[in-house]
Length: 538
Image (tube, rainbow, N blue to C red; front, side, top):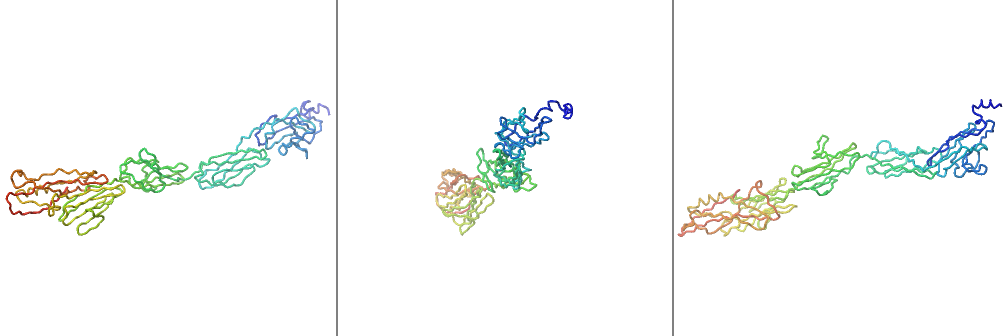
């Protein structure tokens, strides 16, 4: 065939018609364990024999003795390193000499040349550069992980080869899991998370056995859950937390002290914390919309149940605290008065928790609500108040010792009521003899108007009140009245609402001293004695 006709039919130049040519990407870089496709086109002289066999050799190989790295020749021995991983995928009839390499290894780095039939294309070679695998698995979590609800998580390696040995997947998690279905390049894990799994790690590892490499990815689980483990921390002053309460508890605090309550909870998403007084209803308005509730001066108003409520979109939880205000033990001064033929005394004490109140008559303990022929005791409780009254009847002995005692867990206090006559006379404990004479009515009028106040203190010593001289005017001369003797009588005590509290563990009574004149006559006459009761009052 004439050359001009050959050029016309081939559409090329003389060099193209008469020479061997190879077209490919001369250099490529691929990560270890992956696959690479090397596009390749070759041409040969027009009149040459077209061979059906194609092979690839590593640079420097002897094509007559060394095995190829890839070939389409049946039963041809291949290089041990590349066997099963290097493939010639092209069609010689179309001049396609493409090369596919799967599960690339570091040792595959190098230069390769193509051979068709007996002709080697050494002018154009292909260079392969293998680097470390930096790709990581993709972990897909559909939607939100909600506590107690199972979810399917997928780990995939979409960048890996579809050909070759399947990679091996493994999962690591503290959560409850089970393996689901898998494909060649993915694995499914069914996970049921709980609150304790929030923030923990989930790891997917993928091992490529042909390349001997492993990669992994780790994610932190974001588990949503309703508030739990709600607690109240108690602070007082600048001190650290006095305690943490997680169940309904009662807290005692002294009246007037400051208290700080901190509500804490565990939830995701973050919960809104609010304080309520008493059980909250859906329409209740909180007294505080903050985790911290400051009570600057605790009193009766603050006493009762305080509720902290933690709420987020997934639910709510609340914890209650019963605040009990403790009043220091206060024993009010007893009050006594003569009533009819007997003595009536009352005593009150205030504390939280309410104290027990009783009377001590000599060595005998009188408490509760009891009575006999000589005395009657009536006792009652009203909130923090304990009240008791004692009625004594009949003649009162000159050595009478009477006291009121209050006691609770905080301590003990007592107050004494004493009858201490200087010289015992008939009924001197209850009545006072008045003498006849010019000054009798003046003496009685003055006595009826006297007010005696019993004061108490925490000391053991008695500070007597200065005595009052009741001699009538002009008695300093040679008249009938001269001071002869004196006696003490118990003064009436203030009422509970007006009395001042007694402090200290043991209390003693201060007593009033009253000096009485006794008639002395220069000339003896018949004496007529009258008796009247003196009722002391506040």
